[in-house]
Length: 247
Image 1 (cartoon, rainbow, N blue to C red):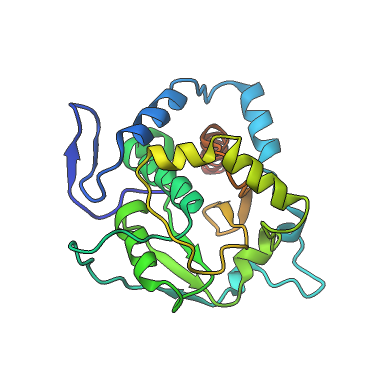
Image 2 (image 1 turned 120 degrees about the vertical axis):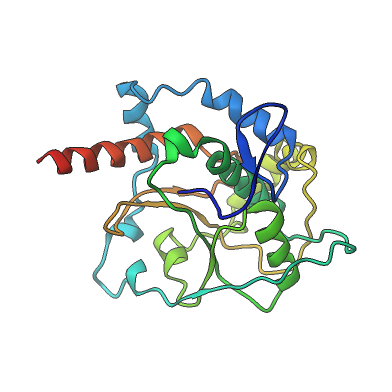
C-alpha cells in the first residue's frame, strides 16, 4: 500500500493527508483510536490476527480447474473528473465504509505501518453504474487504481460468497439494523444507491512481493474493516522480507 499521487494538506495540525478526497472527521477519529491500541511487537496479538486472516481454501487450491489470480483478466479503469454540480449517488454504502477506512489508513499511516506496500481496487462489473463508480474512485477510494476483474478470479478466490443466502440474509439485516452498521455509514455522510448487483461479497487480499496471496479478509457485511489484523499481517510480511534479505 502506498500514497496516491495527489497533493497533501494538514487537518487540524495533524498528519498530512490526501487533499482529495477530504476524509470525514468520524473516519479519521475512529482510525486514530484503533491505531493507539495496536502493538505490532505483541506476539500473541500477531498470532491471533494471522489466524483470522488465513487464506480461504478456494484461494490456496491451484488445481482442479481453479483459476489463480495471476491468470485474472484485469482491465484498469479510467475515470473522468466529476461534475461538481451533481448530487452524490455512489452505490453500496458498506463497500464505501470499508474503502474509506482503508484509504484513510493509507493516507495517514503509510509510514511506518504501510511502507513498501501498494493498494489497488477490484470490481466485477462496469456499464451498470459507471457514474457511481467514478464517484467512489474520486471521493472514497483516494484515487488508487481500480481494475475490472472480467474473469471473476479474485471473487472466486474469496469464495464467491453471496450476501443473500440464508441464513446470511438475516445476518446482513441484523448487522445493518441492530449491529450499528447503518449508523456508522450515516455518520460518515456516505451517500449510496441500489444500482448494480450488490449481492456478491468481496474482501481484502494481501500479497507478498512475489505477487502470491498470503492473507485475506472475507467481507463480513456490516462489520468494520479489521485494521489491527491487517497491520499485523503487513508487518509479518515485512519481517519475513527483512529476514530473507539477511540470508
